[in-house]
Image (cartoon, rainbow, N blue to C red):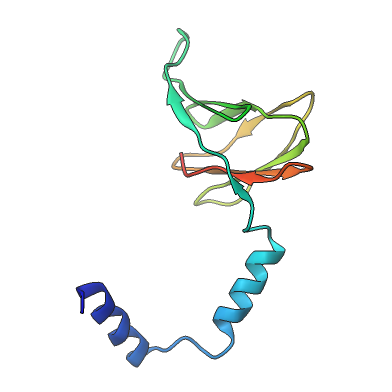
Length: 123
């Protein structure tokens, strides 16, 4: 038995998950759209601009991040972009295929909502 499974067994013995919590979590995840398609992103070279800019692209989606600000362009059918961060979930309306605003520091992942739904990996 691997160490991780031994630790899991020890934690389950000391503080077991209450009955029904796993089922409730699975149901809630389904309601929140956790079955969305994965939108792969690849980091690409940033254009020459002042300051540090990171750029990712994938499946009609382009994302630029400079400091605490993020802007992006999404494929058709996406009407809202929610950004999951350690500090919360800011949401941005999509106007003419673009979104943007402050996302704070640290890794983020994007939840694309609308006719086309998807989730990116953490970037």
